[in-house]
Image (cartoon, rainbow, N blue to C red; front, side, top):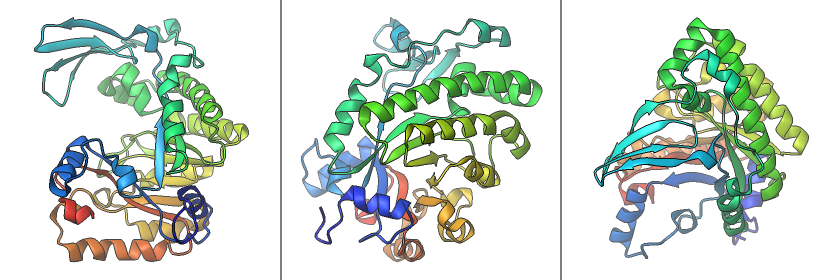
Length: 344
């Protein structure tokens, strides 16, 4: 509990309910490289948990939502090149020390493959061991939410992004059938996460990066036809289970989809990236108490480049917008291009 009297959970839930918190809640995640930078510059222990160090209020706990966790396999590893089959059924190849991997194969190569898809059981205990441990560790120090993927990006994992974007344009009936299958699986994982983590009083975040910096990855009409029914079904299922809040995390500019998402029951949005055209105070004025806003700070220009006056100038209207609730401030992810003193 802070000196002002609110625990992180009380603070976050007050803001989510559009009530005045004791201070503006915070949410960020940190790259390992930023932690290493902080450790060197501030003389901290190498195992310092930055969410605790910076008194971050929100933590997100994730179960293993992949369709095929029991079928993960290392196919080849010569010490330089590693080839694996992951929980999404993809075959990927990576080179030691490289950040990215190369996708060689996907689980759904053609529409006919939909008929043979058999996912591992959503209630497998192995999916939730790390999740339950994290919830237990973080509860009390943070306000913990469950995490689940969304029907766009997770379907891309099964089908391949280029293939699936082509399906959205050329075979929308198949695209919807596959996205619906993925959504049904994610619903079961989400409900089981809420139960095993006992997180009904906070809720669940749907992670589904659906936009680039200019626009969504699909037209609003395609979203309404293919993904909106899945979103409405997911939100309704989580609400029936008792989730207090259902938040959407999507990078990029998803503003053309927001009215539909809010009507579907999404009541929180993250990260509202300024580089993608978001201005948090403007969105706050537009949606009022229908939508809690989480993020708003720029991690690509303002925080890396500064100066401190520019950081404060961007933060000041966000703080003002959230004074009476509805806002949690953050910059999404903090990498080593951000000077420690700028983040502090």
